[in-house]
Length: 160
Image (cartoon, rainbow, N blue to C red):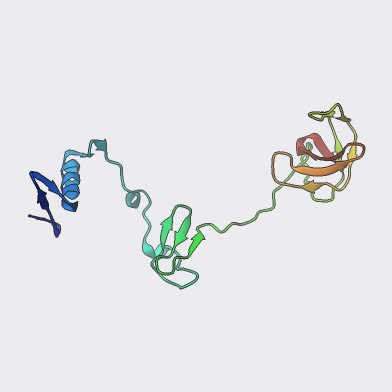
């Protein structure tokens, strides 16, 4: 017997082959479950997207592009590229008052800051010159007179 053009092969009293899996899946779908598991809609029904809405491959201009996670893949040349171009947005850093900070600004500390692992304290009113904005939880890299290089959070400074 044929199932969609695939042959079943008998080994002893058991039926083996690809068609067995297809027959089991068809029986499970008739019962409303997929082999004992409730069926979920496939990705094609949850995210309808036609081949024409995908961009062509930038290397070979092939139209046969598909999604793979957060990137596009061309099956003809093997090229992969991100779906969303990494747009480097300038991170907006504001001080405690709400003023925008930039590299090279001078700021004033608005609260006594104890340094971990040291008995040193950065006192209120300490001016910090020539700051550098960085990514991370401490937005500002700077050099404080009498203490040295350190990182500060922008919520504890105001623009001078």
